[in-house]
Length: 526
Image (cartoon, rainbow, N blue to C red; front, side, top):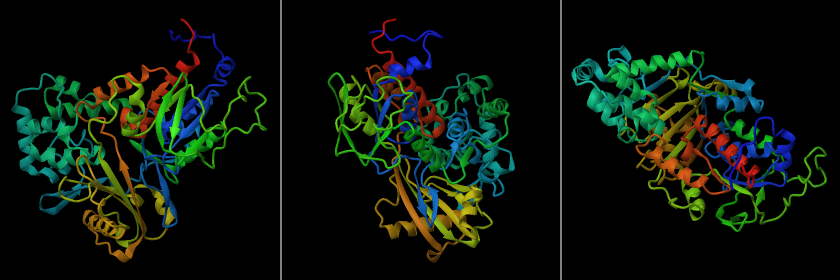
């Protein structure tokens, strides 16, 4: 059966809603991707059931009360590139609460430099690669000797006539030397991707870098050119990241509230065991679904009189509903396990496990942090600390300091990277708290005593393989192509879109729209 696109003007909203009446979709996973996709389906009138293994929606955008204040435990900001996340926030009525990170405290710092030194992270650059090695902030980290060596090697080595390089780490070491690779690039890739620079594809991590290298022939010159091109495109003022007063968890709350107006049903604390297909799709779970308290099923006594005919004929109470489509928005392992039996050539498990990360959120009574001694946070040279990064949340987001008051501070310490389990994994709660305090003290250069710890919350995240890992993009594209070739299936989430809301949100919208269109026009000949 061929799928057709309705010609312009042929189909109005009323006809689309008429077609949508009676169509039912299961969304598996209530992270950002699943919630955004559910919104796309429900907005046209599809009946939507959302299944979530955790007790509450949110996924990596999770929050909880710590020391009496609701704080982000996972994602605490969103990248502004593309404008997709900001558009969603505006649509949900939160635009007036968007905030920029604070600049008065300065930017991030580097810790774990030779001799135990710390220094501000150089401004600008691409993936930690500077446009020149001679600025004071770069020399402070690699020294005059390192700066001259990098400059001379890049200048007098044969020009790079083909810009694409398979490995970021190998590219930087061959052109600029080990000091820049180990002290500048590795802390950035570890903090951003939880990965070694040798495993990162530079063209995926920094689109356009390969073309700039081809044009300029030198790595420093290519970075300078790409920076100028990006500034020219951006032009608009503002930060590369933004947040929401009260935390990114409010975005999840707003999505759930919005879905409630469309009678979307949430089945939380419900593990999906498998999918079955017998002409319709069925979702087999480990327990009777438990509905989320903020989103109730359609009340048959409160039917919208303006709804299209047939919209009130859905059996929302059945424990074993039949679905016209299933949209899988989970982690990679779960997605492959559920989809592989129905998708030819799709492996039932990831080829490599992604990094596991633990984030310890500490609330401290610490006047010694009032001066923000390490700016908004710290990245560490791999191998120098048991933690990979720290965020001084109170210095970064003014609303957190306002909520806490006085000299109370929030610090987030991150553990774990690709091939390295979080150092907190085998520790008791008390031992993990002590380790987080010790690492924070060392990174901030301020001794933090145990009696200053007001509260702590440790969250563990199993991440997907970074999208910028060598070979990852082609593997993911092949997996998604196999999934969308199956009638009634869609897939989204960080493992196919890449990490970060700026990638996850538009990808989920596009994939949901593709599946929605396919279901709406199923059976129509072109």
